[in-house]
Length: 75
Image 1 (spheres, rainbow, N blue to C red):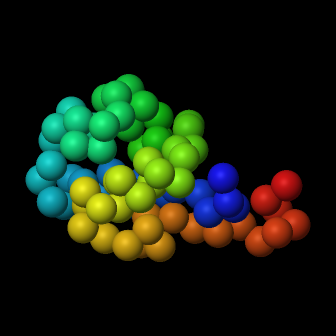
Image 2 (image 1 turned 90 degrees about the vertical axis):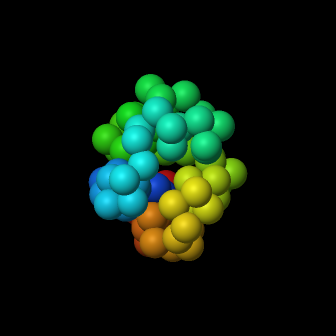
């Protein structure tokens, strides 16, 4: 995976603002509800494919829900 990391609180805020229930959203993204919980809490970092699925299902760009660490911090 690149040094682009998911910003879990942003994912949750957008999902809730859109009124999408947690379990429904997890199903749409083809991930488990518990995995989505861990992503939103920042416990887990999803693969690039899962980040893309989350962004697509939220109707936002990948950049809207991720941040990039400078190269020195990414190691």
